[in-house]
Amino acid sequence: MKNRWLRGHAEALVDAQWFQNTVIAVIVLNGIALGLETYEEQFAAVDGYFLFAEYAFVGFFVVELLLKIYARGLAFFKDGWNWFDLLVVGVAVIPASEGFSVLRLLRILRLLRLISVIPHMRNVVNALFRSVPGLGTVIGLLFVIMYTAAIMGEKLFEDISPQYFGNLGTTLYTLFMLLTTENWPDISDTVIEESPYAWIFFVLFIVISAFIVLNLIIGVIVTSMETEVSAERWEEDQELELQQHQAVMKRLEELGKQVNQLSEQVREMGGRPVDRDAEPEPGGQGAVGQDDPGEDAPAVRTAERED
Image (cartoon, rainbow, N blue to C red; front, side, top):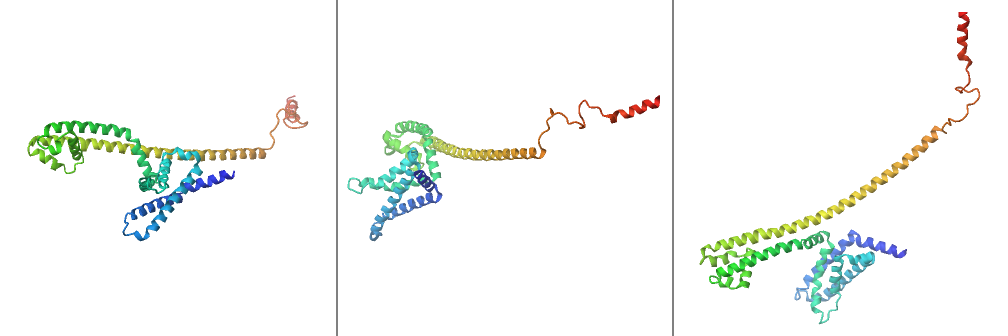
């Protein structure tokens, strides 16, 4: 019983908004400290303070994860973001020995914990992962277009501009620069000087790859994000409908109790119901089979007058 009580308080603690804000603030401060460490000459005098701050940040993150594991139990390990937090914090606690010096550089990944802590960032990353199947199809289409254009460009412009179209690898790299539309006139001008109709190749490639296919990639990502947001809103609507349904059912239950109370009050005010099978009392009015002399008297007087 006591363990359940402690776990309930721990769960309320880690789910509290102030606790989440504290975690975000500590992550941001840790990132600022890691950035200041890069200025070794300017902050050489306070290097010991940076080391102390590093131990403090790591200790805070370890305690945070232990609280979450204790509060949520095995359910903690069912969330992929929790595994991500375990990996990032686990890298931070690796001893700073010579063999693990490269892994110690990965402590900067703790800044990425902002993604797992802030829900909106987490939704964006989830949408990106869900868009991978659609993105794979569009990126495959882009690769087919680039590979086809690379073979054509190598055959057409190998002799004119070997520095850009000398072989298949060089041509692919050139087309990638054209895809970014960065300094593409410098590439096209070296070819158009010798082949005036080469502009057709460059214009068609840039329009198809940079404008059409890349917009398809953006469209897939945007659609996936809309689906993610719609799913979250649907869950919120379902939860709201459930709360409204529970409120209506509770109100109906209260009204049912009030109706029952009113029915009991009506019975008490109306008295005991009359038993129709009971025998009438002697001399009572309305008795079945009993003659009323008051009703026959006028008829006797009328008969005497006629005689």
